[in-house]
Amino acid sequence: MPERIVILGNSGAALAAVGALQARRGERSITMVSKEACYAYSPVLTTYYVRGSWPESKLYLTDADFYRQRNIACHFGTAAVELDAAAQRVTLDNGTRLGYDKLLIATGASPKQVRGLEPAAAADICYLRTIEDARRIRERATHAKHAIVLGAGLVSLQVAAAIARPDLRVTCIVSSQHILSQNIDATCAELLRGHIERAAPIEFLFGTDVSEVTRGRTRWRVRLGSGAELEGDMLVAGKGVAPNVEFIDSQQINLDRGVLVDDSLRTNVPNIWAAGDVAQGRNRLTGAVEVVANWIDAAEQGAFAGANMAGDERTFAGSLAENITTLFAVPLASIGVTKSQPEAGLREVVHLDERHGVYRKVVLRDDRLVGATLLRDVRDAGVLRGAIAAGKPSWAAAEAVARGHMRFADLLKSGRTHG
Image 1 (cartoon, rainbow, N blue to C red):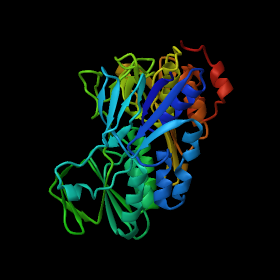
Image 2: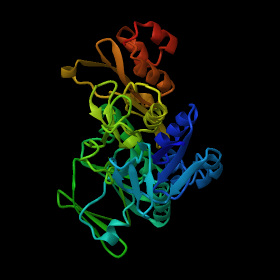
Image 3: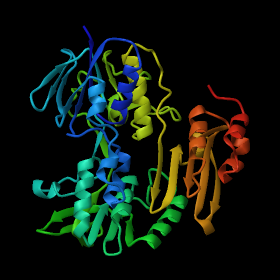
Image 4: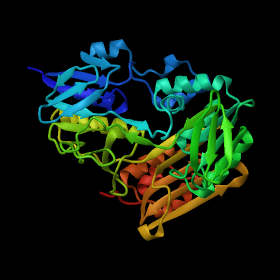
């Protein structure tokens, strides 16, 4: 009898797990469950659709043939509402019960919601996580004149960049003192902010919190902690995400922020694994147990989890935080540790070219490269990502790396490999 594999999810981690499972011998039946009623797509590309530069059809990574050719039973448009680990059974919101021999939890994460609103008003807030969210933002932006954006992280700025136009003003309310405070330092942020404000009708309000949000018949009113008020006809929230674990009983499966996993991506229950934005495991650079949410990491985790579900005994080296994107036509990459802390034994080397808007910083612990921030000049982002992931030392060459003058072959020769 085929081994019953159930995968909760249909994105980067889930697709990679399918590939790993089917690359290995064994008789298995695979069932995939997804809350979204569509084939897999790239969430990284949704802002291109919002901007109108790509049709929706170009977002999709799979089609009906993908699942049919792999004999995957699909339950799309329905979500898991209960997981009984003892009975090895998942219950879906349409009443369907799925038994399994092995289970992969790859349910991803959802945007943190704005609280304290009436249901009708709450439903009108724009978030960007799914293709349906992208459709909503695109439709709302068509007729908007003033969009209020809560936050200035990657998602908020990507939305702002996608909807900005001469007749649509955008105001970003930022609780921290600079944009992208979780990804880059203040110097890099200030350089990028200056470019953004010159390129588009966008205003940033820093160091302020929202005390109240109300919805009129056609307008949003946002009251700040200072007492000032803003009105807009579109409200976008980008205040982080939370892993989708609401269907999991913490008495059965260990949870913290996400589903806790070991270095094989296995949970505390032997036949259940987790991967992607829902999984909380070891950071390969810091050793901290945390959720690292990005597409590359999700796919790597999914591949390792799938291989181990098939009987391998592979050890995942740990998650690596990274984001490589383009904001207002300026490329930006942040990889690994991006903020130095002397008390943590970190040092940094910076190359700043204000005239051309170039900022490059590398962060090192002892003689090991552990992080990089690149603004505008990102041509070697992949090289540095590989060096950071491989644990290559480069303190002696740090100045050349910061300036972008170090080739990958030279970087590998600059010292011994760390274990």
